[in-house]
Image: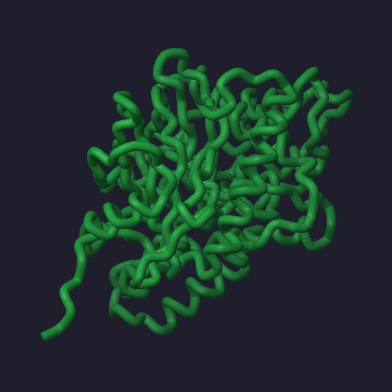
Length: 396
């Protein structure tokens, strides 16, 4: 007889008991719609008061060195709390994640099957969103990410571990895409001929940010690398963006990567999972509010820490990250849906098509995006990013 396989919820209940969640556990429930990790909310009776914690099982297929990942997370969260406290921020425990130790003192716990678990304080009275509903909130999200990058700009060494090597390396992503097309493991390439042709036609300038890092045209920064709208918490009452969450990909990168994922998701008219790509377009007013907020977040007192070369690359980040995500969804679909969680056989292809539609909308608004970016940073620190250099290859 084969051994009985525990349900994910049963495994989560056991894991909850391995952490220092003071009090009596009342319930453990699945939480969220994340693509990668398994998340649960643990409710605890703490001396008569109901308190909640966030428990997560880290996907070790995606994150092959989870202990190094947690070292990154601890260093980043502790530094953020110190910087926020030094700046007089109120409610620091709601503005930076707090890692809870396991009962053995480590910031994680492994179960008997090798599952890798961690726990955080649950941030109450705040939530993320699939779509942005106002320019004011778009600006708040931009400000949160600009502030996040600024606060981490003086994190002491050593260099953070790369939790997913080449995560935003456009050359690597494009090579994986072409390999998936050539192998056609799941027999799906013919059904995605239009999307395959699109990415091939728009590969020019795809590695612009990688090249800028390699040539030291821009400095390497500590970046989140997954600043989609769902990873930013807004306060329920004030609408203020209070916390950047899901820090697993926080590692060395480029400022344009984080702004790019903001530009991909905050001004988008439809969710990433929208099955009808005709509903996806870029909202220019949302983009303008977003970049103004981001600029302000990088520049308390009117002094931005970004260089002019970094500022010029910001709208390129929006275009490049949109193309990278489209290629990643398509590559996973061609390989048989091995990476992302899917709800049906065409889910990843639908995700790819929304990114293609958004990239085309960005091209239609390209001059306005660049002008809005320059205007948002004009005069900060006495510098202006100046006029952009040669235009990019057009999206087809």
